[in-house]
Length: 259
Length: 254
Image 1 (cartoon, rainbow over the protein chains, first blue to last red):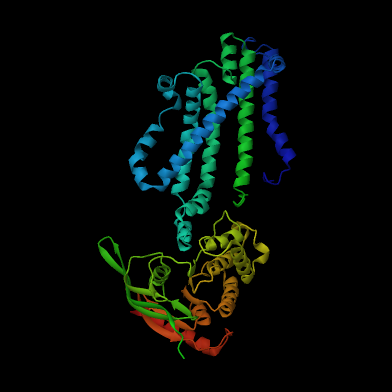
Image 2: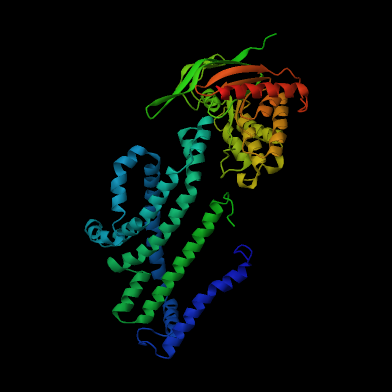
């Protein structure tokens, strides 16, 4: 049966098999002490720690702090990314002037910018948001550039035949035609910005956040905190991506279904 | 009785440079089109018929000679000259209704008049039930009908069709040819059809112009004095078909 024909219940059940297997494996490793118990803490210890964090509300503060940074950085990076990508894709002049530098700089690992960033922006909240924005920028810009550049000449001729204004052409033809690529870029940007958020919390000054929970835990060798952090990061990332997928499907509902 | 000429093409030439050679796609073409006429242009591939159409529409501007429509030279595209391509070229992200409305975006009609025109033209091509459908939900024939509705939405004086049925199967093609003829009779728009299908050209046209390639020139013009509505089995049509075909084959032989 194709994925489309399976009932959602079946899909969810099958999707849960791997996580459950991992959970069981984890429990077995901890119970039979197949690894250092102080490092591979049992699952129930992590649950206990989680409940403590929930009880004193700290997990929500940390989560909110991380998500806020993530959102600010993502919006900044995605906005600049779409504009930059659109300019590069649409204007041969811009591409010639800025393109080579743009494409060369993309090879630099995002984390390598941290030293420069801490000099320019300090180590506080601003630096973290800029770093997250940079993480999101390249995937968005590259995909947007590709999407805008590969707009079919045929569509542009139709716009010309009906004498659409520049702005109208951008709104009615360019953006929708490039939308699938732009959305692909945004989804990647979402992934990278979340990664960047945790990275920023690791590498730049302390503050509240899920990454900080993990760092503090590691420093005290409280691996239950670390594991809690990992699980939360994973769950949030998964949720964000799923939501983004739904949004994309709605925005692009004019596309033919590929079965 | 002489209907006024709506299009005058005088000594039109177009050249392309390919490597070091000059290709004369059109060479000193002269053609006049009367108002309300249905003109078919036939010829083998490479005879320049599509190029001529694109020059008429204003999508290509680099040429020698004069192209005059309603007394004014053609300097670009115009809402008064509608165009239907071989591929439907509907925007996949818009519904049928929205696609037809694109044609009117730049027109000076009021929003209500625009909505009215969109509705009328969708009904005209028989897609009333599919106004809210997306192009990927339409068959090839339906999509092409939507493209025709879009081409007519501005009530242009001239509708240009560049091999509009070339990508469709034979049955759909026949049906759409009939529908196009009915639309032409009803709307009385001057239509210029470019095709490589001789039967289509003769069945639909008042006049059939045969073009030859290398360089692109008009070889001969045939009059089709058969009243509408026409019967495909009419022996007069068949004999004109044969004449046109030999003319084209004669061009090939040169």
